[in-house]
Length: 333
Length: 213
Figure 1: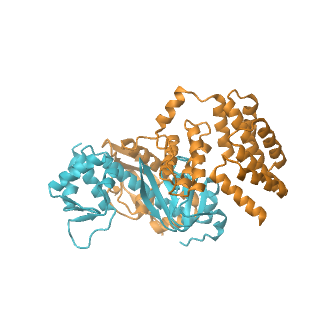
Figure 2: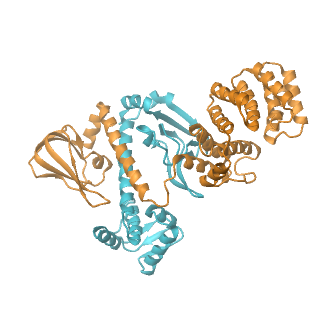
Figure 3: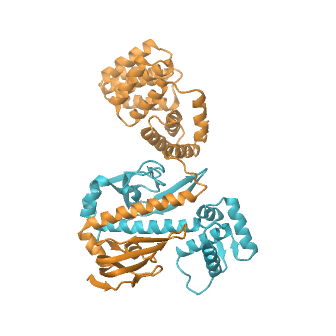
């Protein structure tokens, strides 16, 4: 049973270094927790509010007390053992919630202090850190993991500094995962460059506005927000000043239609695109999406025709060919 | 207190082996309770991936995300096929009410994390590099059970790189300090372990350096 206790002014409830399973609530009076700042050696006084718990952390964790609990004026407290405290907190989970908040703040503060003193983890900003994680996995040929990190990068930093590289690496990771599998495949050039190195060429050769918008939309697409992505791609395709990204956007528009399951629009769009730009590098992929759309519509004859066309032409990547062969097989089976 | 988790089935998520659950530096908004399989917690430092911990069923990770959406401080990757319960701030309240045992477990986990960070911070505040390396051993010693016989010798399954990591020193500086201790016959550095001849000597040495500041 929790029991009430009284302490006279100038007494000490517990000392720094004590190990104990007692937890207290201050009912009335004045108590100060006195500790020493680890860094400066200065004495710190924390005054306990009426109704506040103290001694929780050390009791729960079975660690030595970190402070002296000094009674400033005659005080009344209620004493709990750890099991008693647990029983109370289980009945009233707001207590736990409140303490979790306090603890989490303390922990965060401690983290900041520790990393401040660590010269070696030189305070990488999260954006660079996430990108570097992707690069690390890519350099180790752990494609799935690299893909995860780059996709996250593109999701969180749609107009990030390393956006273009992240898109490129994400595509490579996806492609290599299919073509070679984890742990295999050639090295990818440019992996392992630091953020600064990637940043530099961009400063000299600023990405055009179209390019920036394009990559932002690619990132939106990767979040499966196809309608939003479609809007941006259409805008670039219509008003963009950078020819390269205008055409790239035209291709992406088709992919958006496909992902939105607007198969007729997809077929119409790609057919028009192929007629206007028969030499785009994405041609085999465009044909594949047309084939897939026909297949979705139940027109397997036409779908098969497009698949066979891809197989017969040069320029299709290994990954795509494998998908196409699988699709043909499925049609036959 | 028993953990009744059946009610939480709808929060269950499954992962393949070697799959990332979350990546260091990405914003975190969920934490996890492992039900099946193991999860490796690691950090990438330059060109090496450092395993911090391998967690087992029943353990919680990602707990920093409960109250604030700060970047993850490490990466969680599955070792086996893993099943976890995933909680976020939205369903956290439900969890708390329905299962205070998990909430208490979480609270205890925080006390451990705070203690460990604080201890680590104490190491790093030492200006003297020798004292810093010595204090790393004291810290590691506090985390392992005391030997049965009353010997002053302590064995650490650790490497110079690990010590460097904890001490916040370069591997070269750390090796120099270790070599210095070896030449004084206070330490033996082996391939897979480091043997400290007299722990009390180190305790005295570190506390003298701490007070002199």
